[in-house]
Length: 440
Image 1: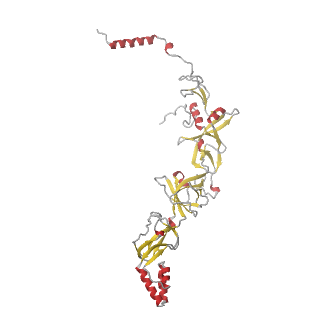
Image 2: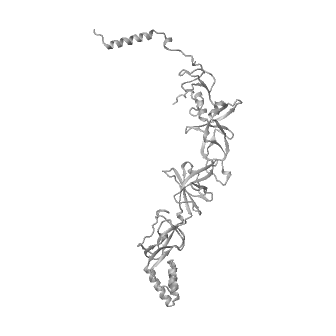
């Protein structure tokens, strides 16, 4: 029989297995007494490896890396631990739930002030003056807009000149009244004074305003007149807006959509002018539904800015304050008897899974500086923002005014409870508690 290479390998494996089987266990496995699995009866205490390789019930060395286990006590911090952690606490206040609602909006001209300039006589436009050249131009009362070639006006001037020559006072008065209805009283006056009839008359603005830009002011887009355009009687020539009247269209976030009410006073600010304290603004209209794309509720503010700080299209910051009733509905801001009284907890003190909410309340302050905390499950109301920008929760149950809670270092306190197997955010009955029996 010829010796094969694989036979050598098989022989070596067999010899190695036999050698291992004959060696004593003490030469293969080193027994360590670094950790003895002795249970400790003290609840809320565990011993953890600094490298988080192991968590046990007794002191000793980590059986994985050999480092000395550190004691972990649920809800307890020494003065040194609190200092290193930068632990901060806050006392729960009790009082009315007042929130500052912040929204952003865009400025536009108040189209309710739009008024048309109407030519009462027909003709063809032969010239445009400065007031009819560009949208947004400021027009003063009596300022010329267009020159109109009008055979009708020329004929009426001839009739008026003949009546003046014949000293026919009733006819002169009737024709002068016709020119007044056409807003051409100056033309009639010139003929009465002996001037010759002219076939071109000037249409002037009867009031002041800003020329409405294309597409502004609602569904009817503005169109400026053009030279050569035939103008029918009583047709709007252009539209003018009050240049100091504005609408601010703000978008209130969905979370605060039910808090906005018509009549609420609003404070405004802009990036370039800061606080606009002299602008008196109130909510005049609130949309009955949410914007599906923005997830906001639209509200309109009507105001006047005679100092010309607002520009159409610019963004402004709107802020209004609300108070809540005991039923957590918007209260009458001017009637404090409708306001509710609540415990208010800082948002930084609350740990939440989205369904379960907890805070860690100070239960005891010991003479050596140690702090002991207890877990406080919470039933929360809405989240509020105060004027300084701090977030607060309305507490419906779990805390009361005067309670002291951790606001910084909360995660470490909760993680200690998890390591020690006591109740925590994620484990309401403790991480080491047995699972409840399955029931049908």
